[in-house]
Amino acid sequence: MDLHGNLQISQAAYEWTGRFITNLEKILRVNIDLYQSKDQINAGEIFLFYHFARFETFIPQSLIYQKTGAFCRSVAASNFFVEGSAFSNYLLNIGGVPNNHPRLLPFLAEEILRGRKVIIFPEGRMVKDHRVLDSKGHTGAAVLALALDAFKTAILRAHETGNIGRVRAWAHALELDSEEALIAAARRPTLIVPAN
Image 1 (tube, one colour):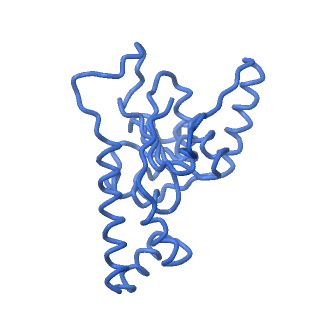
Image 2 (cartoon, rainbow, N blue to C red):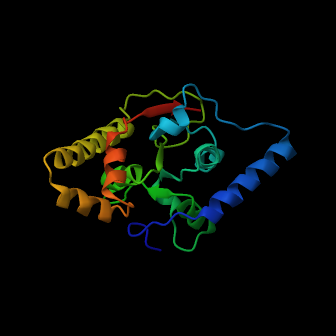
């Protein structure tokens, strides 16, 4: 299992998850939904979810996909990714990335520029007592936003100074349809959305 190489997302896994959640809602007689104001789900790029139960491992991605059609990446503890594990394969298929990925921040920034969303569990673990504050600073989302903004600034600067070769190379490396798609992605504001 190549956990650090080419991490592919499976649309089939997203569709299966959507059906599973729909059936779970019927069985439990509950409604699971994301509520928003001012189109936060479409505009948001980095989503923070506090991790109170195992369900958060896959529900946010599915709900965001249902609302926007965008695939998500979520950062998960590296110990969830075990060779031959069905759960590990599932996490990879719905966009899970181990937290020890050697290029974690650049990889996630690239994914956002491709139009994907990123889900971060800021505590880095499940919080069973619903107390999410501790003595450690959990700055992953802010650091990712800063790295993304630095990349966006470099793209826009290259565009403004006429370095179309560099912009074209970046668009090609990100597998985008055109340089214009990359410029549009770089012009989007970086929005962190706290969610639950």
